[in-house]
Length: 215
Image 1 (tube, rainbow, N blue to C red):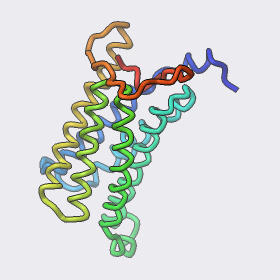
Image 2 (tube, helix red, strand yellow):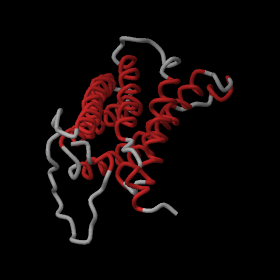
Image 3 (cartoon, rainbow, N blue to C red):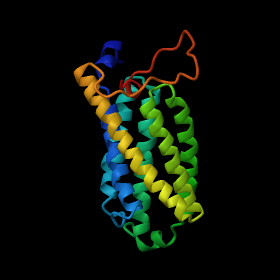
Image 4 (spheres, helix red, strand yellow):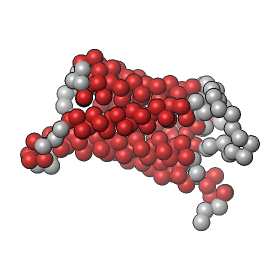
C-alpha cells in the first residue's frame, strides 16, 4: 500500500500524455487535410504515442489519485488503440475476409460515444485551466466532424475533423510546453489561464493533482 509521500513523489505524467496527443493528432490531421496519403504509417504513431504514452500517463495518474487525468489519458489511449486496430482491419492487415466485413459506420457509432464522453470532459475541464478547456472544445469539434464524415459521408465534416485535429495538436503542444517549462523553472513561463470554476467545491473536496495543474 502506497503512502501519501510515495504518491507525492510520482512525477506528473501530463507532459508525456500531452506530447503523445500532440504527435498522433498532427500525423492524423496531415492525412485528413491531404498533406499525406493513407493510414499505414499513422498506425505506429497511434499505437505508441496516441495509445502507449497516454495509457502510461493514465497509470501514473491513477497512482496519484488524479481522477481527471486517469480518465482522460486512459480513455483516449484506448481510443487510439481502437482506431489503429480499425485501420489495420480495413487495410486487410488482419485478413481479407475481416476487411470485407468491415462497416465504417460502426466506427462512426464509436465516435458518437466518444463525442458524449468528450462533452463531459469539457465541462470538467472548466476546473483546470483555459488552455485545456480550449483543447477539449476542439476535441468536441473533431468528434463532431468525424461523426458527420463517417455516418453522413459529409465532406464538410471531413474538413471540420481535419482542421480541428490540427488545432488540437497545436494546443496540446502548447499545454505540453507549459507543463514542462512552468514545472521545470518553478514559475509561469507560458500562461495557461485560470480555471473558470463554474461549480464551487464542497469544503470536504481535495484539489486534483496532475493534469489540472500545469500552471
